[in-house]
Image 1 (cartoon, rainbow, N blue to C red):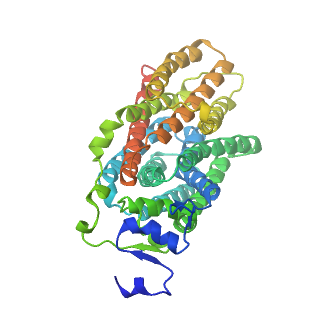
Image 2: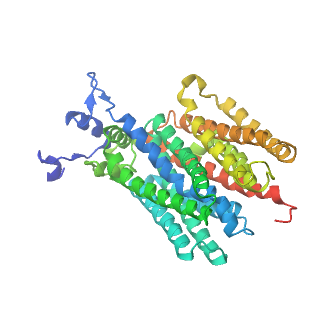
Image 3: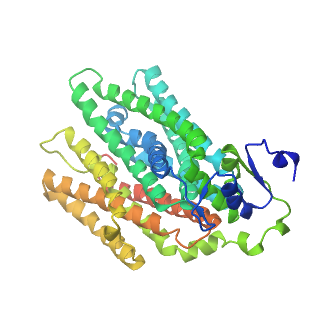
Length: 448
């Protein structure tokens, strides 16, 4: 062991064997013991959940800003189907990047991955804001192509952050995963409610839609900057986060090394032969996928149904109603708010669906929403459409949290990290497939 590790003045914890890390942290009072020799989880859980919520918010707030100001982009680019096209631009970059990162996830520095992802979100969001200011809100193919490029950057950033964060949180506790997923839903609810407020404030002013869009992107830019600070500096130093990452290191995870170092805990490994072979052995990604193929199918199908309807159908296929220009905005708000509320329902244990077969049946039953939306748009009034959209959001949020929080049970930290990335790929594939199928709603129409 080097001299730095031997120095009593060193504030860092150094160990040559990851499995020694937890006991060494107890000895140095980094975490406490419960009196039986077993390390006890330290405090800070509520703070960690709050940070996870904000990080979830930041992982989607920029993209949701794009979706929610769809009426502004339809005004600028009326013949380019922006809601549909931007979704199809976003997803291939997100999926392709995440597939590569999942293949190498055991070798990737998770800390660097997440910081780069939030930084890319920040830069791309700021550039969209600058683009609108520089062009004075004018349309045309040039600005549209730039927006498409920056949307692709959002896709890459999403692959970095969503897969990295879910994998990172998967070896901690289900409440952290739930908080992160709730934050993702909150990004849509926040932007939707801001859309309502800005429409009320600017409806009768010149360039009211543009003023609202500028406000959205200014707020999104701030949130992305806040996420960089919270993840890189604050979250990693929380006692409970250090505890879970130390535990992951003791189970053979190498992705947490940089985060532990940032928290003042260094792990140094010698030759692989020094480690207990059983401790570092893990299932391959292929084995994990086959063992959890029902959960993978669940997430894929949830988002195939949701994205085939939301948001494109709600903007282009719901007809004219008494609410006028408020109609698509109300639908988007109701979806996002119910999606957020539903992500807290599984916290009530007796309301959480834990049967794998029951989850699959519930998810397959959502296919009935497709004919329901079709006939409601054709024959129903706005009240029924608002109800259906609310139900779409409610089931989307509830089932997403149920699947994500059940899947990692029974696995070691390296396997949980890999499984989190695999399931996020399935989710993104569902979003892409749903967005593609959404074009079927306008086949045969003059606007196609």
